[in-house]
Image (cartoon, rainbow, N blue to C red; front, side, top):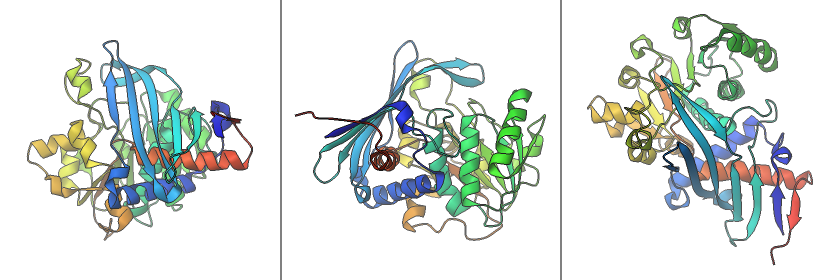
Length: 351
């Protein structure tokens, strides 16, 4: 029997801690057995409709499958927005027998936060793996760029891994949005969130710099980063936006100086960084400012091949450059199991 799960039936099933654990397991396994995972693949129509595909699995969770999602991408000066986003579709199979287990329509949301923006939960879970290994254990202060659903999930992932976080300065383009963000998530996350009118305070004296925006250009001067700080960025970008004429140059969020100053640089998957020519890391590599060997992957942290942060004065930098099939499958399998336990979804017989 195949389980069909509708969007409303996917809500409230998965928490942040179990999502971070599952995604870390996905990266660990795909480093140890690379052929079970593949980078995101994107195609674009002339009208700007983009389809993203994520094939992969996590055998330790008994899952193989894929996710597909479609969105209408619009470029507006220095920012990117989505005029339409269709429900993502997860198709998951048993990784031992190949049996089709479920088709799930919709976004898997974080049960504490609820529905926000597309892919925000899984993206934050990947950041959470980075936080687990790269952020100082005593981190208390955060500079947060962005006040949307991505920002909420990123901050909750950080708070999940570093309960010591007490104070957050948040900046976004709209004053109303950042004030609403502070009023909603400060009490919910048990942190003091202070809206600021310029981005300058976001780097001053903070332990963690979090970037969760839809920008196409660099957010800050990396020369201002100081020892002990951690930086996380989540815009990956892809060369098809340039090749298709949608952008004159690759999207950026974090500048070259940050990469040059960082003692430890980690990305989700270097293969995607190269194949999509993602600006934040591929750019400084092309210019000879850093080397490919200077960049590690989340799987290196998950397997222990790289120790992560080893001293309080290191500058660490995680470029959460894209999702992978394995991480999508991990999230989907956790949601599928919980849906089964709670009697959600509809079973059908395919014959």
